[in-house]
Image (tube, rainbow, N blue to C red):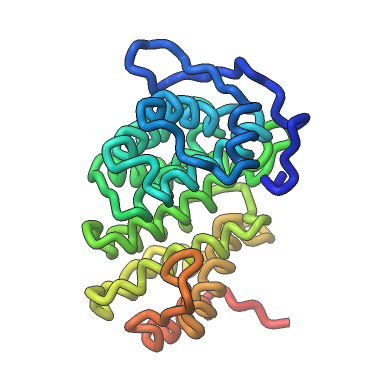
Length: 298
């Protein structure tokens, strides 16, 4: 569903609950009709005194199992308020702590949408080492890699995590080589799920944005590929005639990364133009070497 198609019929629940942000232990109710009105009106800023409670409610909406609520008007309002600094640094820090804790939530939609909110916050320049630590624990270990579910809607843990990886990788307080190593961990983690909804493109974009950091040495820009190379070199398991899903995912991610190394990547959504990585030519040569291990002739 796209927010451009939202109607009042899509969001009619006024007492939807989930609960984890309020300080008094109560779950904030979610007034879906109010969020739709705010979205329709262009996301105007509320009174400052109302913002903490409204942020509580938005945080709840972004973990709700109803996809029309979780991925609809509340998402757009939250993103807009963060971009416009309506939600200030202190409140963003509070939201960031909540989202970092959600990486341990039992519900996949809560885990998968937490990086979307953290991406909004980190892209504003905010950073907390605890957010990064929580993300590093979760991202390569997540096993529910479904892109879309008939009941829960879009989940996209890999794609959402890739966006956050790129945001952390672009942040001056984060070591970019650590984020590149994390991307490799995600790529070589065994899974039976084949990326089908451009997760490989999103992950390549997050890696490419990280590779744009000027302080990366050439060795650091290439070293993270070593575990992927080892996985490719190991070949198929004995008696298995088909390529493993995680190997297929990694192959397609690296192919897209080769393209982005060649033409460049926008450092952020909406940026004026693509930027090539400082070590783009060396990266292309190394990618070609690694991919040669799994190249199949016709």
